[in-house]
Amino acid sequence: MPNIITKFERAKTEDVAALSKFGSATIHEAQGRLGALSSRIKPIDRNMRVCGPAFTVESAPRDNIMLQLAIHYAQKGDVIVVSAGEYEEAGSFGDVLGNACVAKGIAGVVTDTGVRDTLALIELGLPVFSRSVCIKGTVKETLGQINSDIVVGGELIRPGDVICGDADGLVMVRKEDAAEVAVKSQARDDIEAKLIADYKAGGTVIDLCNLAPVLEAKGLTTDL
Image (cartoon, rainbow, N blue to C red; front, side, top):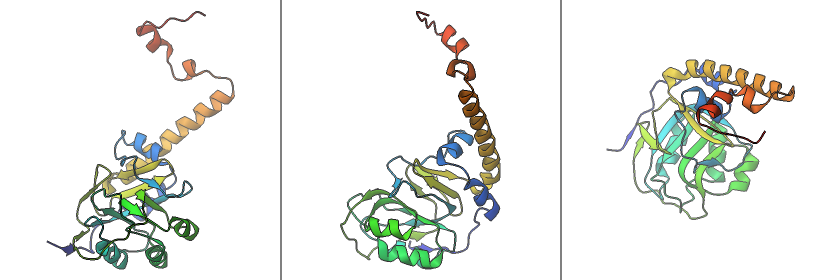
């Protein structure tokens, strides 16, 4: 049945802020290689970054009435996440709705369908992640759910879970795990920063990644 839920628990603001410092790949690795959305969903501009609690939308393909309602009910800092059947041949979101999002302080939009007016959206500065770019219009006919559990990009996303994205893609973090994942992401960043410094100082891949025993066990030989 069609239903709109407006009251739900969001990830803590401080946990979202902590996660926003890290790239999507770092977060994905830090939480045990979990939470990565399909690589088909990418930002319309590689410089876009987003991180915020999910405001979920279940929408019919080629129909954006529920997305419009989500913009009305979402709060400042929310990331609107739309499940619309992975239908690529529809431009369900454009610059007019983009301006509506910016006016409300919505952090970004993620959809498994298409968007359009991308040059205007890029100039607007709203982070938009989509499965496709398509000029074909949509209708406003079929009601659905707002803030129910949805599947987008192969991941189950609950209202209030954290969505983080950048040029590499999108990752989801459970709201109850956000603080821990932020700590683990920082630890991973620290390790990688040291590795980079060691490479610059002349370290080798085999030594720094401890590959010698692995290669020996697999019987690899060289002519050196």
